[in-house]
Amino acid sequence: MCFPVQLVAGRLEVPVFLSGRQLEVPVFISHAEIVVTMGIFSRLKTGFKLSIDSLRVLRAHPKLLIYPAISGIASIIFMIALLGPLFLTSAVGLVGLEYVALFVVYLGTAFIAAFFNAALVHSAREVFRGNNPTISEGLSAAASHLGPLLIWAFVSAVVGVIIQSLQSQNNVVGQIVGTLFSFGWAVATFFIIPVIVFEDVSATEMFKQSARTFVDTWGETVGARLGLWLIPGGIVLAGILAAAAIIFVLPTAATFITGALIVLVAIVTAILVSGVITAVTKTALYVYATEGRKPEEFSNFDFETLDGAPEKKGGGASTLTGNRGNI
Image 1 (cartoon, helix red, strand yellow):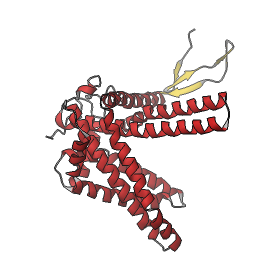
Image 2 (cartoon, rainbow, N blue to C red):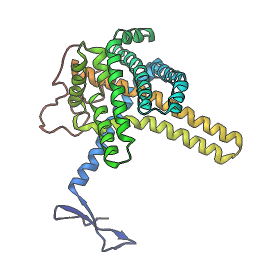
Image 3 (tube, helix red, strand yellow):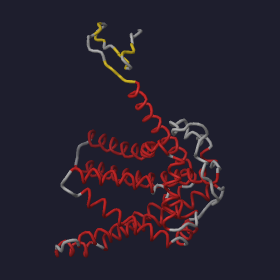
Image 4 (cartoon, one colour):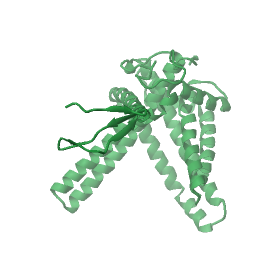
């Protein structure tokens, strides 16, 4: 069947049919809307392809899951240890004291996450070099960068408190500013851990280097980061569907508990896998941007065009390798 699609005033007019009869209710889709929609799917596809390649690395080196697992356990222990002081802070009710407590929480959890992410990033690059890194080697590498990691955790905690104070305001403007600030901060510091681990730079330079590398790699394809969540999201969805099927077939108290455990395991697995996928992807992009070398595990991915993702304005050759340095 041929649909008489027409271009009217710069917009595509698509007629609607019902039981073979054309309705007088045309649907208008602008060229810009088509480009935006295709761009979103292209960016999701880019992130998904990077996730697949990162998953291959994880499948070949499953011990990489140990880093986010230890990080999560250490964070839980840290939070439990703070329960008493946090409760005391809440009971005292002094103005501003809750922000001090929040800062301590952010500082501790940020440092724990940064430390084990640094170990994971180091191990990922060793894998790209054809080595078989051990957990102890990764932890030793992270320990050799304690100073920069502490600085990063401190700055991250300060920014976290600021963002939380903005988002907790009762006015919409403050919440919007807090959300935008949070997004911008996440973008600017996306490569902060690889910079700390692989570069010998000052505290201020590591933030600049992270932002520059982000522009050279992701650029306008920032939406591709969402594609990194497709596989972890699929794991959670599979767990929910499995739990729902069990409960539907046999709705008993035991199956409800079993279903809850299945969902919990799926969520934990998704968090661990997501941590590894994100770290491996960051490392692969950073290695290519700074060394100009494509990791063998990502041989199917075109780093020059981010695998067909929309190029940044200016066209021409890719800027992905435009800021190379030596690691």
